[in-house]
Length: 104
Image 1 (cartoon, helix red, strand yellow):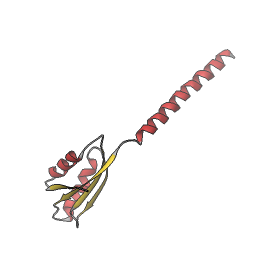
Image 2 (cartoon, rainbow, N blue to C red):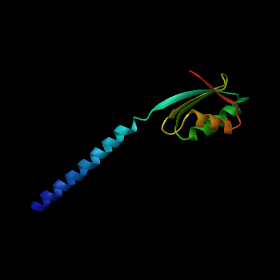
Image 3 (cartoon, helix red, strand yellow):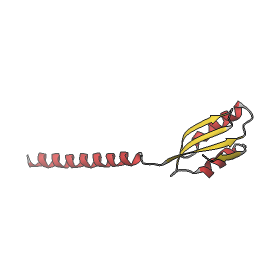
């Protein structure tokens, strides 16, 4: 009976540790800062907009991307711990577009 009690206590302790560490990790996950930047991008056609929509979401830290061909604007929400405005601007420039940040 003592062995069963000891086994139960150790199992309960292990489950408690797993539960606390899981809750701790889940709590930290939502605290990452997200910012949004808007760029004026010279796009000639809908294919240009598609090129941006296809490539930029794969940049590190990008959470949301909106491309407005008519207004010639690209809005990007990103995690500040993964990337910054300059990296995102360079990523669009690598696709051969002229890019300028619009201050909000």
